[in-house]
Length: 119
Image (cartoon, rainbow, N blue to C red; front, side, top):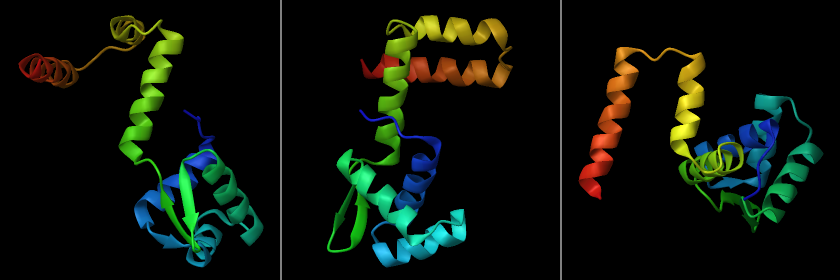
């Protein structure tokens, strides 16, 4: 899956929030939100359509993938590339440097228990 730049992600977040959105309205929103020119907005639309993230049909822009699914895929790819696909290795690396609060530990434990009951 294509990994968006920070600017592309912020742009796509705007679309996820507003979709479906007309391309003219999107130009206006991007001018207000990011200070972009019309050509910049259309460049982003075109690139993200080519990557299969967005679609632009009859001047109406919508997403091809929802925010949650995109973030899940990015998280899975990060774990695969960085920690050889091992979630326990990722958690171990994280907690070596950052102390978890009791609430965070309980939240993680609940997620694991909920997962166990589904399997």
